[in-house]
Every structure is written in structure tokens, then in C-alpha cells.
Length: 550
Image (cartoon, rainbow, N blue to C red; front, side, top):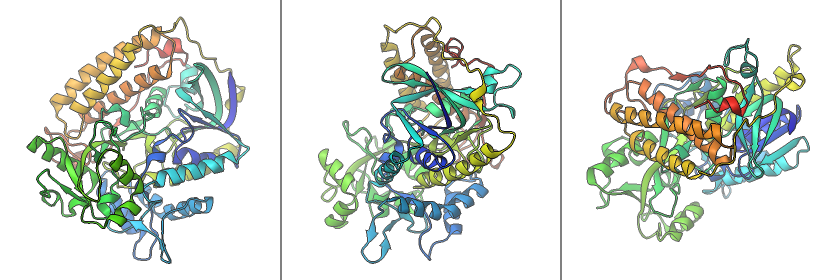
């Protein structure tokens, strides 16, 4: 089945929906979402969106906080542009209908989170992402120029470099033509051709055993971009959120950083505070510091968790400010008003990703990326809290502007006239060994948690590398022999993404931001640079050949 659109948007969080809404002014748009349209990391974002909204704040202060959190790897031009353009994009959200929490007669209520020097976090209580996501979907549904494809999953990009033997994949002459997409419900593979493709498929938290991410976060966009020849940067920087609810049935439910911003205190089992021993900002230190501190204290004491204490805050304030968090904790037997809640770190945000410029453009022409799937240079070695939604808004807006200019250019060539091969499954048959998928999935996530977690070492990383390489070979053989499914594709993607994280971590011979290694515990200015990974191996784009891709 062939589907032709001017714009193909892969992902339905704030980055993808922002691009789709604005691109619909310039042509037809297809939105591909692996699950329901609203199922994205944006939906689960609790804290809010950082933006300069008051006279006592400034772009310079926001940029300074961002750069300090990024531990020397932020691109200052990107940081300043996103901080400066942020307020205008936030106002567009408000005009769209997003209802941020207000203080009666005093404007918007602004929270403060770790690493911020000012209260600048707009929020909708503790369901900010849900408010943004559902408001944007309502706007999407009113646009006739946008067609939505829920329960459709990216398999691989279609690029000139994979079709034309004269063009090297990932080179300056390579360009995106569309993608092969799996209809998850029917297992039919559809060919999408597009003039412009935006990757906004989110991060890779499910690579780890414990994560705050939704089940869709399997690194699909990062893995597919790498296979296409796109440059991938700084995958070693995985942000672990310091405070997820510790309970076997809670599935690492996130306790927003704004709980600490409103006065929550981290304590050990005996009630002792400890963050003052690690950072001058105490419980409001940047996330990398807090996560490592908790990890260290847990290992030192042997305890399974630490505790977040809000009992000194008036009960009505806790219930009103954090209704979702309060009710969820109550469901698991923890009343935040009466006693501290148990918390542990969990994989939360992929700070590395597909390398893009100021306009979200990758090294492959007509392929853009925005949101958690990309590395723009905003986050550097450690993301400042609540900058992620901001990045998706601003970068997608800039990407649309650049894409519109490309379409108007006289030398722009549409892929619609090209003879694109249909998907060929070769001799693949339906699998009778699905246990291979579930077993390998579990093993990869345990390997990553145990050996490539908050604190690393060369010994652990080499151990992980050896095992992941073996698993990649097993998965490659499985992918070659059996008809693809959503589970097969996700396994293939988390294995490759795990490998990219390990490769980045092994390259970086220092500790910086989110990457802390016992073998190189100090920051080295010689490593004040990005780790870039790229695969330019020539391959076709039919399954018969794709089966050879790790």
C-alpha cells in the first residue's frame, strides 16, 4: 500500500504535533503513532515547561542555568535561541487552549525545579503533559489537511543512499524519501513517500529495566536513523530521574521534581537528610547530582530506597498542587500528607540522539528530528528540568520554517516520481518461537541496568558490550527468518540503541554530567566534545537485506 504526503511526522508528542499543526499550512501531513495518538512521553509529563514569564527572570538567567546543568557540552547558540523563542511558543499553546495553573488575580503559578535559579515552570497542576497533549490533539482533529495513522510503527527510512549505489548513505547527497511503516494491527507494511520527514518518536527509556517512560519508548527513531546513516550524538548521557515511587506494582511512577521545588525533602530510612553533603542547592541540585547521591546512599546503606518527605507541607497544599501524584501514591498505600514516600532513581530521559542543527535538520537532506529523539545541543551532558517540552516546541517550529523554505526552492525534487520498491519480506515466515523476543528483551534491559546505569566502569561496559553483540547476532537471525511484528521491531531497536549507548560510554574517557565512570572519575577538558556515531554501510531497504542490520 502506497501513501503519499508532503510531510511525514513520526511520533505524536509535543514535538510531532507542533510540527504537524504548523506544516499543515504548507501541505498534506501524515502523523504516524505507534500506539493511540495521545500515547507519548508528553502525555505523562508532570512537572511543566520552563520559560521566562516574569520581570525578575531573564533569557540570560535561563540560558545560564541550562548551560551550567549541561556540564560544558551545551551549544550556547542553541540554548540562547530556545530560551529566547520559548515564551512566544508557550503563548501559542495558551492561545491554542492549554490551561496552565493560575494564581487567582496574580497570573500563572510558576514552580521551581532542580538547577533553576528562578521560578519559571508553567504547569497544569501535576498533569501538564496531559493538558498539552489533549489540547493539541483537539486542534489536530480539526485540520482537514492532516491524516492520522495510529498503531503504525516505523520500520526504516527510505533514503537515496539506500536505493542509489552512487550515493553514500549519510553523505551530503543523501536525502530522505519516506519510510516503511508497519500497521501493527494488521501486520501489513505500508510505503509512505514524503517530501519532508520529521522524526519525533521520543526516547529510549525502555532500554533499562526501571524507567519512568511509557512502553512506546524503545528507541525506534534513534535506531532507524542510525541505520539510515544519520549521525547520532552523545548517547552515553542517559538521565535517571532521582525520584520514582518505589513499589512493585507502581511501574516506576514518576514523582515530579516540582515536589522538591515546593519543599519536599529527601531523607534516609532513619530520617537523616543527605543532599546537603553533595551540593549547595541541596534537594534542588541538578538531576545528575541527586540521582548519583541517592544511588550512593542506597549502596552505602544497603537500603532499597530513600524517602521523599512532604509531611511538613500543609495537607491541602499537597493535595491541590499534586492531585495526580497524591492519588496515585494513596492507591499504593502511601499518604504524602502523613508519611514520607519511598523513592528510587529510574531511567527517564535520553539526552543524546539524532544530531540536528538549529532548525532540526539532520545530516540527511529533508530528514528532520525534534524532541527527545534528537540531540540539538540544548541539554548537553545533563538536561535541565522542564526544558524538554520547551525544546520540542521551539525546534519543531523552526523545523517547519526551514522545511517550508526547502519546498519552495526551485531545485527541490519530489520523491513521488521515483520508483520506490515495495516492501519485500523475502522468505520470512510467521514465528513459532516468540519466547526468543521476550527473553532477549528482558536480558537486554537487565544488562543495561546492571552495567550501564548511573555509575559505570570499563569492566562493566565491556561486559555489556560483549553480551549485547551476541544478542544483536541472535536478533538479526530472528529478524531474517520470521515475519516482522511490533515486538520484533522493538526488540531490534532496543538492542541497537543499547549498543549505541555502550559505544558512546566506552568512547568517553571522563566523567561528565550524566556519564559517571569509576575509571575516569574527573571531568577532562580534552573531552569537551560530542561523541558521534554513524553507520554508512551500504544496504538495501527491503527486509531481505534489512535482515542483515544489527
